[in-house]
Image (cartoon, rainbow, N blue to C red; front, top):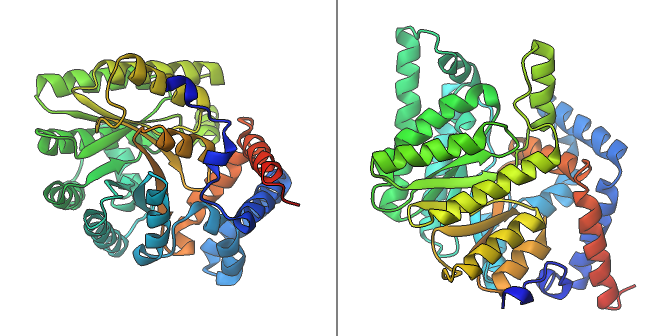
Length: 392
């Protein structure tokens, strides 16, 4: 059956799309193949956010939002969730807030995430929700704390509030049987976030995995960080939750390193990143009894590798500690072929008001026009399915 897993099978990949939906997807990816158009659209979208102008809302909602987001609120997501589950695919719900600064914003995000956990608990098809710590804490504070700078009394109180928010979410998630992916962010705040997430894992992952940290394998140090996190979990008797990604802030990281004259934390080549990612997969599967991992990748070779390791080691394909995940609207050839062959796979389903999800949507558009060639691959597969269906 392992040989039957074929990521080029477009009939399975697009079985859930009508002819009309396939045509709309084809049109969108043709537009996204133009880097100048993407750059212009991204700039206008960010200007709209800064000036609080909803002028582009209808255009965004009819194009990239519809492709990559589940809806503007939780109830809007139900149709997407049900449709995915019909195709043997789970959903990971993600409220799209990030980079917040005020207590009012933090409270609003906290309440929204708590509602997301409750919504997930009512859906067998939503085993996990996702959050960004930057939606619950100031980046400026996290950067100062990471720099080992002494905190004054007000900052100690701020740290206590951050921990309280995170614990409220994890406590509810643990009680309701829902997992929580905690996203990775920029390197200058990531160590602080790692500290917080490891505290959560030690508190909530004693009997099963509730909290997952995210490891960006385009960073030169992350493989070692993953191994040390596992060693710590073993020593303190809790399960490690590990979501593996390549990373989403490469240009930002390299620019900051160059501007501030410190070595870039990012691997010099794509090949080095791929090798680190695949080594992390091997490590997690080698220790799958104590690590619950998620291969959150759009890389076909990395997904094929994990599927082969699971099959060769005779591990049940639906083992709860071995998971795959791709973003909604991308790499359907990977997601639905994995699901068809019995592996645990989910789509990452962001939702929220358009103004909240614009930064996420811009990253998706930009990475699809990057040197990875994602948009070219997507276009080729869509065109192949259009031809297979005999559409004009």
